[in-house]
Length: 490
Ligand code: SIN
Image (cartoon, rainbow, N blue to C red; front, side):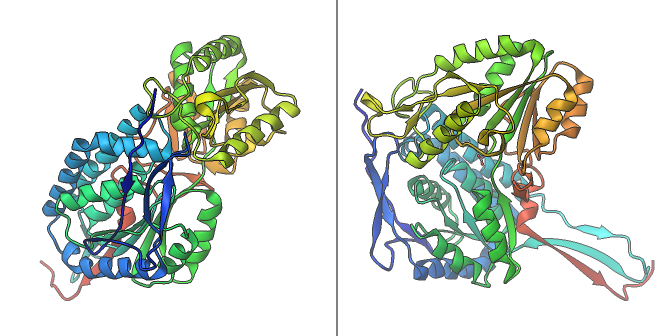
């Protein structure tokens, strides 16, 4: 089937104007499945980043003093517009990112849900009146917008990771500068057009696309008007941002790497457990921070689990994300394929068994893309790289265990602490294991855990701060205590 790629050129958004970069340069956006051109965006410069911050700073007084209801209405309308344009946004996303079209459509809905959720939260930014120690005084606690926010967003969820930041920022009364990943800037621009068309005043959201992520970060971190940075990406870059934040003591939210364990106890329902692992592991071709990276399966269920997993994984269709029936698209680039393959080769060299996959797909329809076959390796041990490193590809590594303590010990043996999963029918074990896992997110009998109304975030080197849920908006609010003296005693 011939695939027609979108041909979509986009612009920077600065203070309500869609513009070219001051240097006049553009760069192409390409399809990881075919190498074809999807469109282009301006290569923003330091001057452009500063202009975007100027615009966000200028829009701040009006936006932060607007009514919560009016901000909520704009967010709800933006969600509606995104849904109306879901087809176009999803096709562009698939073309630049690679994920299968049904997944891209699912992401548009997921992204819109953050606007809706935070529209509700905008109307519930309550303060407090605390009992005073001195009865002559009164104690007020205010929650106010932090100010100008920078959102640095990743390529794996180009719409949802942006709305998960912009939703609460806008709801709180903050204005923003967005820097999307250079691989996926077109989806970001389309979503910002929805916000604009929903009636957000000029400068409330601004977009700077650029190939020079270091320059953008440097400009943002050195501008005292930017009060908070929210970043989703690798732990390595997150550490650089923590260092950069020290100079001006910037507030940070960091959603970094993950390395999720997926535990299946003997008493689990077999098929839901297999389906759960597949949903978690192969979502977005294994390129999510919450993907299962290590499956620990109890001995009694191991053989049946492996057989059913193999059968289902081998039935998956790999192809261009825009082709009918595709379940797994390409990886984002060849370096990602190299990393997945290195993990497989390292594990096999150290004694693991390749159950299925373990190859780059390079012939025919795959010839110009970055494809890797959905893979299962059996007999993973602590000596193998995949045991400790995030693969970010469609590779499931299995390890057998005997006791609950052993499973917990394996699962918690990681520098990461983002998502974890387990399957059991024993309610006491369910509670115990959920409490013992050192992860910010636990899926119990569930392989998909993401939702706008739940707090998403990690422990250990997976970062700090929470996105979504009732606490998600706190990341964009300052808490201020006001002492009212000499009020009198009643
Ligand atoms: C991520 O991979 O960082 C986000 C995944 C999600 O929100 O489900």
